[in-house]
Amino acid sequence: MIPLDDLRDQLCDLFKNQFPDAEFSISERRSALLEIRIFFAPEVFMESYFNAITGKKSFTLIESGRRIWGYDNYRYWHHHPAEDPESHVPCNEPSLKEIVNEVQTVLTRIEHSNKDRG
Image 1 (cartoon, one colour):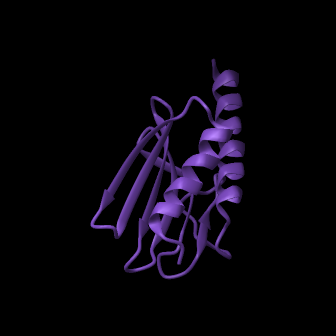
Image 2 (cartoon, rainbow, N blue to C red):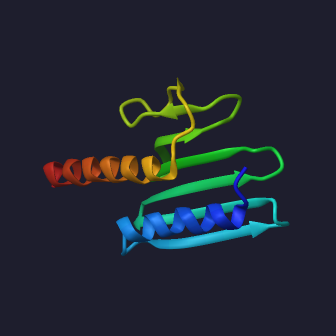
């Protein structure tokens, strides 16, 4: 497993490159737990969670307090697609770059959806 410091740096660098206006909140505990929140808009953020002891990883895009997309390895790697974020679609572990690209796609959809409503 990649050290948490490296994981933090890689994830933050990828998101900073793709989303230069995003704001980051990083919490690290006991060199074993890492939580990163990346804020894209007042009600939209991604929460990433890593536990070096258990190997748990989670990437969740949240809008207005609800999961709208995500990946995690609770029990097995699975995807929560934007079309049905409560579903669990088995998958392989995504790369950090895949995570960033999929977040971009979902955020673009949200932006277009909000413009259509407005």
